[in-house]
Amino acid sequence: MKKETYGLVAAVSTLLWVGAGFVGLLGLVPDWAAAALTIVAFPVSAVTTMLWWMAGKGEGDIPFMGY
Image (cartoon, rainbow, N blue to C red; front, side, top):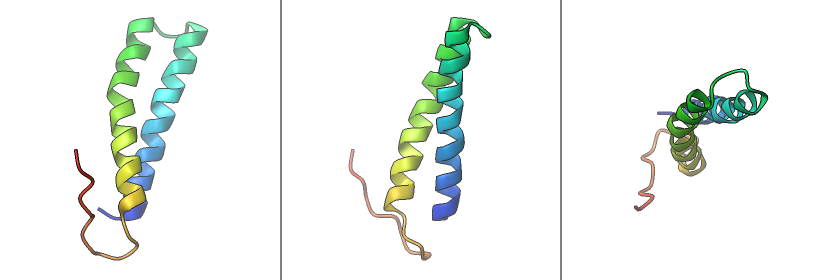
């Protein structure tokens, strides 16, 4: 994927888990729903942010990040 795609996915998933925290804090959704959305969206946000950071502008391979 391209750097712009990684950035878009990272931004959307970050907004999802931050938004889930706010609506959970305000009591608009049950706590379990906010927690479930955070549990799903946070790892996606972390991984795609790292991939966005490591991706170059060109069409080259993404370097190995390790485990």
